[in-house]
Image 1 (cartoon, one colour):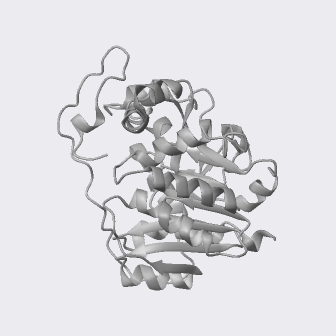
Image 2: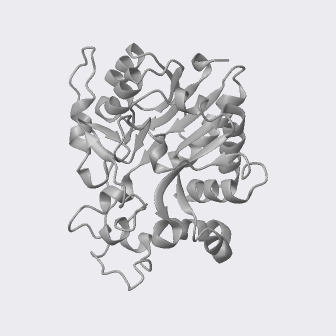
Length: 318
């Protein structure tokens, strides 16, 4: 099998074209030669026609669970089970992801790994929401076990197709319909499950594979109540660089393959959005974002350790 047997998959519900634009245009221009698949529910007609013109395979699905972030892994693993010839598979978020260069090349150059975990470049002990998600699934002992590990993001899961299929199936099976379960389970499986822990790896920031930029970006936003957490980012000493709307590892000339969470803090989003423009004519369509979480209290001062605020005491949803 070759690069045409690779697949990048996303899941989207209630999206119009502006929410797809950066992802769809960047992936189409990245040099990726595999299949571009989207599971979609209730997307606009303009989005549907434009994505089709850009070569995306659209698979309509029925929303059966409250959290699309959980259901997507059943859709993805079931779809992979039905395929006969997929080499590498990536499932990623859509609205806050861009594909800057062909990830197939990078994956080919790392043949000893079956699964790659996408670091959020912050440790569990230095964050507040993710430890709570782990504790809800695995108890206090689970939270303590992961305290010194880097948080891995479920918004980008990549690896050999069979391994990714088995991993995402387990993630779905072990989750309940609750925000955060998927990420907690991903982190525990890759660190403790014999099926995955010895065949998975977390690429470093300078390897140029996946940049999950959220906490680093938040750490630079003066006045953001979550800034104290962002300033604990492992990227602080080697910050990524945005040049003309494209993100690079610090001091390097080759961009990251995949960039995720670029909307956090909004320092990067306008430049990235300006950079990725379609080469085909697209009808105008207003951006229709999902409702943002509503802050219920605060801003609240952090305790001395910076970790003792319950996310769900502050926000209406995750």
